[in-house]
Length: 191
Image (cartoon, rainbow, N blue to C red; front, side, top):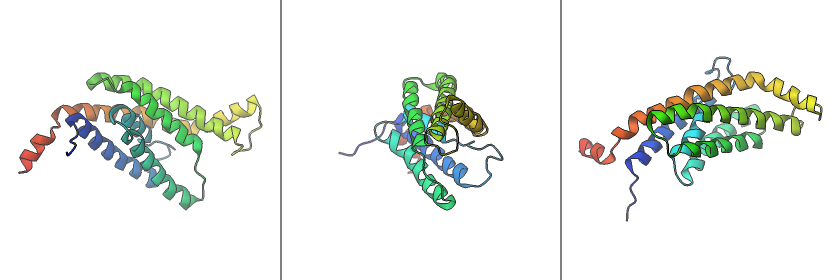
């Protein structure tokens, strides 16, 4: 028996795939964020997938985008992959689960504080890892940890702006598309 996705799930998958493509462009095209490091829709993708996709897809799609672009990007630059970045983005998916049962305009409004919390967690986790692993030469003291957070602030600006810009935008796009998305109607129009 052929399994058919519900219109909501089909719309969510379509929006997520379009957002995934946008993530690839933002991550791989040099200088697209014009001086705002980390100004990408990646956080929005992870939050949206946590909120609107189901099962393994909510994890596989965003992590596939992240890993594939990281492998290309990091291999070209000779950088190492950071487990803390993946852990932090996993937290985005978990936070997105809190938006599962909220639809429409309410989801757009609720996505803002969730995106803010996710951005703060990302900042704390990734810069804490930089201090803990001695990726940068910070002293292993509280002052060294605070120095790691201070040095991470220029990168955090783009993450915060990107998450607060793209997250409500993608939830708004979904709120506009989902009620009108009916795969049966689309198939009839194509015939």
